[in-house]
Length: 292
Image (cartoon, rainbow, N blue to C red; front, side, top):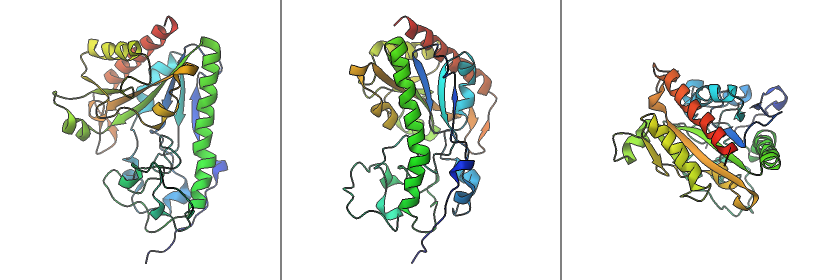
């Protein structure tokens, strides 16, 4: 029988998230970057099986770096610094696998757990290579502290920024920025490749003119763009899509193969070009939204 795993994280020593251009909002656009954090609590690393390199394979590598020129142009951004392997802020709080915990509440209803079945829910159970992260059950009470100190902090700040943006511009677009494994693109694609996927909840999360604008901007730069395949939008795209409140969302997925080596987690020779192109598209989108 596996031994229960207990540890306590000192959250006061963690730099939870970074924000950019939030004091003066120049555009009705917020970049949400929830999955490229590289920071692991030391207490967590001491109680997990894989190496830190293997744990990092769950992250959206270098997405913040790709967007750096756009952020330098004054676009508001919120970046999660903590690895999604520790807690995934792009999941609902209830997306957990009760079998991971030795003290999970018995009265839980157990709804909305489709991702947790594959080990990639709110608390990741496996690495990208499907290797177990923990040697035994962990404490759900400890996870509740992760939620309070990291998950809630990110979402509370994102919600504040959305409200401030709507107050200033009358509406807001959250561009939720991610990267996707190249193998997923090759499996589902009938075209030569997918460089970018735009997820708009099948035309429900934002006005079609916004999706078409972004798609055309990438196509003008000779990239292959797919809509809603393989990703139509996850928790952030769904949760902050409130058309009646003029809050819109769009999920951007970038094929990792076009800018990085997925095995070594290093930038490739095309990184600067891809970064320039993405940032130009996003900057053009920001200016487009000013006249929207």
